[in-house]
Amino acid sequence: MSQDQAQVLSRGTNCAVVQLPGRAFPGIHLQGDTFVALLVQLADAARLLRHDPGDRAALDELDDAVGAAERFLDFYEATLSQRGIQRPY
Image (tube, rainbow, N blue to C red):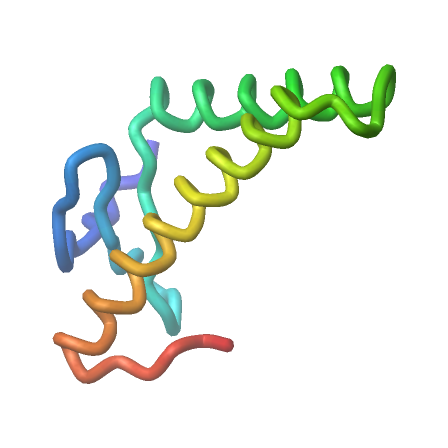
């Protein structure tokens, strides 16, 4: 196991912005249960949309998952901005 230590730049409710040693840009650390919930939501929406492309409930689930990802990205970008770090994209 590596003994490298990551630097936590900012903590959110279910995520953190973390700088790993040797990496040019920080990353987003998601709690495992948060990641699994997001993955399940996306997989369920995909399954339902393959069956019925117009399934409103599936589209709502997909919109919710995209909204969650956007909130993680907003948190990431705000942290980078506060720390004077340029975005990697």
